[in-house]
Picture 1 (spheres, rainbow, N blue to C red):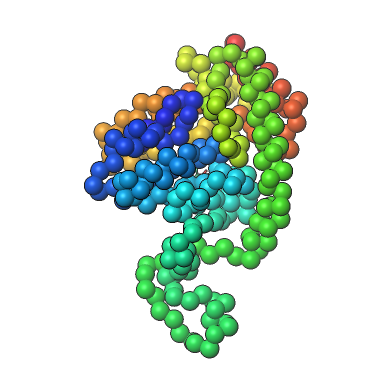
Picture 2: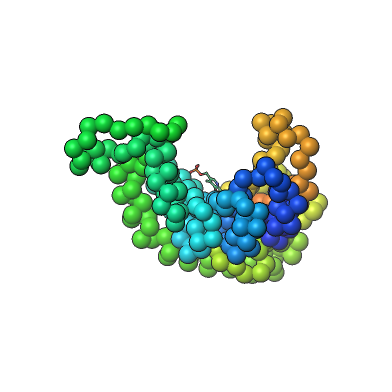
Length: 274
Ligand SMILES: *Cc1c(COP(=O)(O)O)cnc(C)c1O
């Protein structure tokens, strides 16, 4: 699917409608940069087309929205997310059958888990599906519980910093736009900006690195990766491609101060003006 626009880089509803076909089984929506996809729209879409709806909420930990509209929402607690257990993640779902299936899949497809075997008298179990080893261990869970207590405060800090970025970028870098100009619920995971049409992103990033400011890029588009391109060579997603050509992610971290934001914006302005 293409994105809606450079300003709303979320899965396009119009494109999803156009591309849904009898072989389509599920829709996966992603809350890019932490900004929630429109749950009502996607729930109706999934219902109308008879699809499962899965939410990739890896950017949206700490929000109330994820998991409400879809069949399941998936979170990542990798080291670069809003909260982390270093590796690992979480699936939420309301349907007990879905939950049980996920629980069984995470542990080799076995019908009962280790703790259950310990408590119960039965010595044996069955394997009724192909499973994985995706269990989260207790050490990670302990880290996660402590992180969870800080998550809302951290997200609040991210929100304040994002607002400061928006205001400063507007006045100091008028050629740069910040997606999601219309407010919507967000966990403010990253701070993506769109550089002016003619800016050389690599040179801007190099200059900023030279001034001590790390930037990144979210993301190279999937359909341009070799593995996908060799299988789906004809996919063209013009808005996604333009977004991916012009996007630059500025530093955003709950421990940044407003004066760090000022520094980043000043360095960006200078990198663009040279
Ligand atoms: C990090 C991330 C993932 C992958 O999470 P893992 O924990 O590495 O499996 C998937 N989707 C999005 C949007 C992410 O940011």
